Length: 401
Image (cartoon, rainbow, N blue to C red; front, side):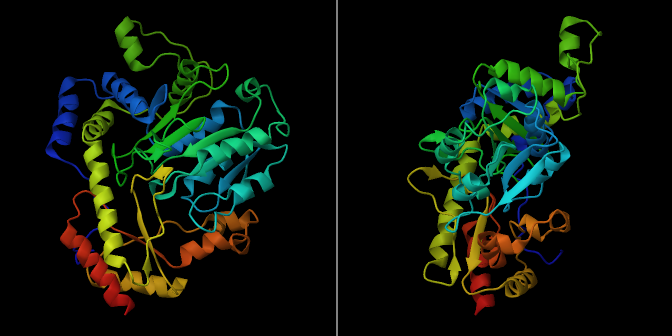
């Protein structure tokens, strides 16, 4: 990769980020502690939710959202076929059955008609994805859930029986800071899960956030305690609580996991959160620059903000008109020869061995495949200069000529 002049997505780490992490390292408290707790409060405020839990990945957040409400064997979870594998893998990990559906023909969002068509008495949750940071139509999904409330059938005495309907989980891995109908994404679904991975708009190197408010009579504080319990071995005290109370003794209340975020990582996220408006603005500028450069060419920019949805501009996907999968792959290889790193987001799940083995066939997902076959994801990050963006655009134009 030494010939790559324009990398795909390097992390945006500045001196103030390094200083914030160094301060935690010097403090003597580097695991989950006061910095993580403050980061959770600040993240919840950004999302417009009552509470947020910081975890070691978005995958952990999706998994715990399902576990928290007792979704398990015999249950079905509807999920988009056009997403990173983690979105659907967590369904298998809790023992439930993934029900893959196609995307809309005109965007990357889960098909609302297909959601309604696939709801059965076994359906316990719907997981949508804000592809590239552009929100789904949250109100429409909530309306679908409400209109199918009479179909919901509880299979066990779980938290879900307390509100008696299908659970709505949003995979917001890409959409921190995106806006839906004038409000920040993070409180429209029952649980909204964000990624803070190294390539995301805001990073903690590895990490995730689960944001939520009260659901029926289940308070946000009750949910917070449950998610905290599950994220740390089922212990009723974390290290900070033991330290503050000068009490070592604790209890194990349930089978839990090891998904907590540390103060060292939270410090990085908190530092970046202070300039997040700047990060979002620069990404929007680069997106606009790309679109201007590609106007009137075979290169189509399919992610479009509208009156209700303003994306976070996490990804810059383009589609090459008239291009098939093999030609797309050749274009990517030629761009690499020019020193331009690109990617593809995403390979539809039915194309993977795991999901083919579960009986899914890509022929049943024509919209997902049509998006995928001609799609290339371009570099987009705050450090990318306009001149570098021009190099990317001119490189693509040269190759497809």
